Image 1 (cartoon, helix red, strand yellow):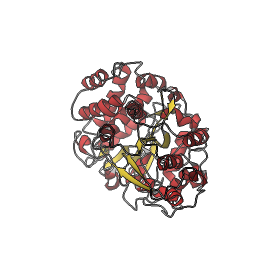
Image 2 (spheres, rainbow, N blue to C red):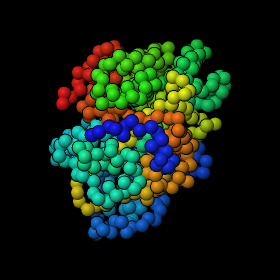
Image 3 (cartoon, helix red, strand yellow):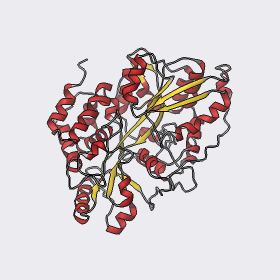
Image 4 (spheres, helix red, strand yellow):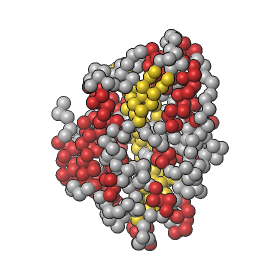
Length: 459
């Protein structure tokens, strides 16, 4: 799949309006102030059923969905299915698994593929297409994507054929923190990378019983992916977007000096025992701490900062006030200077392994404005973004969603899609995850980067 879209700046996203709600692995608040985590109004809206009548009588049919999105982030995906189910009589059976990336190929090979899979990596889409089991998107989906999400279409395209419509998108360049804890200590949100490192050192010196950072990369068979996000975010900041593009496409080796520099910079935080792992233990505990739990010690003061995507908003306990003046909030992971603003993001794509009418109808719904609006209306706890330019922007009420949209539509920002998601599946969803996990548990920089480089497919 060509990656030329990757070179687009975030201005492309601005052209798809303010990026209405939807989600890559998260939920958003439907409350008036968007403050508290929790479920939104799950009552279904009425939608136009006419687009689904063309697929025939679907009453009593079932569509299975398999995804990496698990509780508590699953319900905001399940709730918006109801208008489609009411229209068609189809029952959507949702299955989330932390072992998704490892088990999906096994299930496909074994003849037990789901009807629909939400693929979080375009690289994994390429791997699945190579099995010959993925069905090209039907014309109704193509029409919806061309009208609603044209700038994401290339990520769902393999060898010139369009397979997978975008489901949602997320912003990854965030640092979660407690505004009140910062205020109590007189800490200011850093505007540059040097300021971030200075703040890290000051927090460590001021708080002997806490740590500046907490982190966790455990995610079942996908363990390691949060560490790849760290490297990608820092790579954008130390090497720049053009070198980042070459790295992702393997136009420079994975162990290029620019990558060595970025990994060393990440190590200044994640491998320094003075700075991590607040609330959990030493550096190695990062590998065994789940990404869902990783940021929670911010709430009790065991750590002060946690770098994680917008979708982390769904993981705060019910009742947590997620707002600029609330219990937790997020700031932009700063660049080397204030004149540049790289933004890392990701998303999922809807791939079908069956071409039954009810499956095509459900694909059509997931690519529609109606789904995006219902997704927004019933969304739970924040951090929701999608590229559907025709969705109702007024539904963007949660403060995390607004913050994400600000990042994506900032004219000074430069967006890049998650690098591991664009790499060949064997690397991006394999050796890169494993290599970074081994790095956290003690493997040195050179051995880590060499291991991933040597695993890159030769053809």
